[in-house]
Image 1 (cartoon, rainbow, N blue to C red):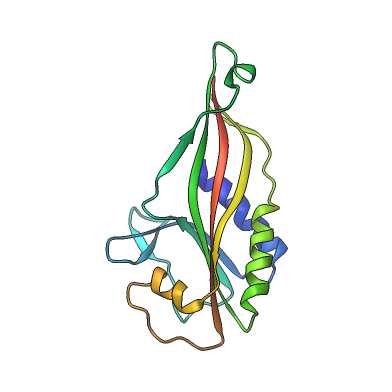
Image 2 (image 1 turned 180 degrees about the vertical axis):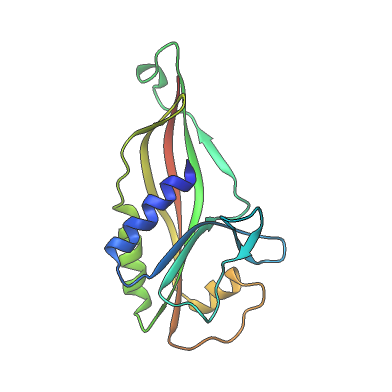
Length: 178
């Protein structure tokens, strides 16, 4: 489910910012500080982090240790019948992008707007109804060196024209279990 929602987000970002040639999700950071993505062809992880061979791309990963928060729905009784239960799931995520020859502030602004303006309608998976999918920005990091220190196990020198920006955001959705 989360991967499907993030694929919609990736396509939305790429349509609003056609300069991006690639976007991937859902990456993790391992104990050695490497950004990894599950390989679709096998049951192994492959390196998906920052490198000097890709430009104008982004990845989405869990923030911190990949925790998911669950929140109560205020006035839950008016939304849920006796045969249903509901809660709000909040996924703490981060998008990291690498572009060449951009203004970091313009990039951050456009990317944040692309994230927050993405609309996802209600849908059902098995006995679960998903509603109210929202992307809420939390904080941004526009200092390329700071992003490199966070996202790479050993920061190295890169082309000075490469800009790295990270935006932390929460993906929240309401789960109705029937």
